[in-house]
Image (cartoon, rainbow, N blue to C red; front, side, top):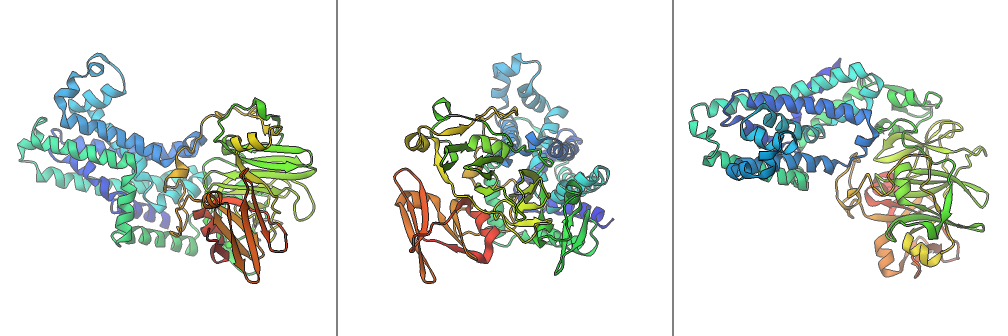
Length: 553
């Protein structure tokens, strides 16, 4: 039961985490000058319940897991901004028509309810912070990704222990706040300067959360060495737990040269996979939320003429050109399915795209033993990158590298297939007779909506990688070219802007050139061309490590 104690300690330490420090004034503010002694405890209780419900929603719904973290920031920050406005301008709020006339609704619930010091206002404050507090502990993600899928009852027990540790510290803060202001009657005046100051504090904190500035504050604290030891200490406890007891629902699968801790939940999802042969990094695999095939690959793709496609010119697409014509696979469909199993010029191919790391890669579906298989989405991630599986042998494959992570083909890699990454506008100009993947996929999806909207333009992650290389912005799209044991990587945006570059590796010069149609060619000085793929910088750096060589453009 070591993990039970660890979960409780993690809850205690979460209050001291850098991502929570900027939010503590919300809890303190709900305690100071409250008219009702129960106010801070209602806020804290609502926060605890919010964490519990938020966790179950993440595990139960692929719709919720696909919602970027910044959306929860908008929701949480928006509620705090509204409440801050109520504190600052109570008379103005009371005069708003929708507050006076609406008998039921969210605005009245947040506004009038809190203005009258009702329980609902306190509940909403706590509920607004649940998703934010949830993301600040490595142990929380351990429970979410490994324990809950394997054992719902045990996962709930650990989750409750985590919440109890968090609630205990927050309650202590609330008690101290109430005692400090017990005799300060002016603090309870709803129109006094103290309440207005409190409103300004809530307003500022709401803006901080909604704009993601809390993450910048967290980074500032970590960069200066403040409080980073809290999360490192917690992570060390987790690592020791995994190594010494296996109590996190993992079991050790012995490979010929090393021991790899493979999450038991992953083994249950893939009972036919041979985990005696496994990459040691697989110990860090996390459930992404959706189950095996929960993100459905398209196995029987249909196509429509390009002239019938109405999506904007700016939509990016993977383009395969063969003797039988040009096939186009738009991102707005790939984002929802991640893999398309198709055949081009007689070659079985898997068109793959991982939205979490922007990795667009095409593989030959012929396995090392000569068998042809379809490829599926496992629902698991490694370093925020999709883990695929073939349906023939259930070998697990890393999408970013094409390497087998576990299974009968361990030690092998899938073969890259050349392709281009173009916008639909560029396709319309260069390949007007192209065939485009149809949105009639057999699945009900809103292909006009990006479930990860905004993710590619900020520095936040849904699943944090183990490290970030600060050489380039983390979401910068790179052209990645395997050359023997070396991985060359160049900025795609820079190549498009300059038209190309050259890179010397040993005695060979490699030329990257982008023509006027937007198509890229990589070849050496003997004229041999090399396949490539596209991927965000953070993923390229963390996946390839010392093999990586950055190409200056």
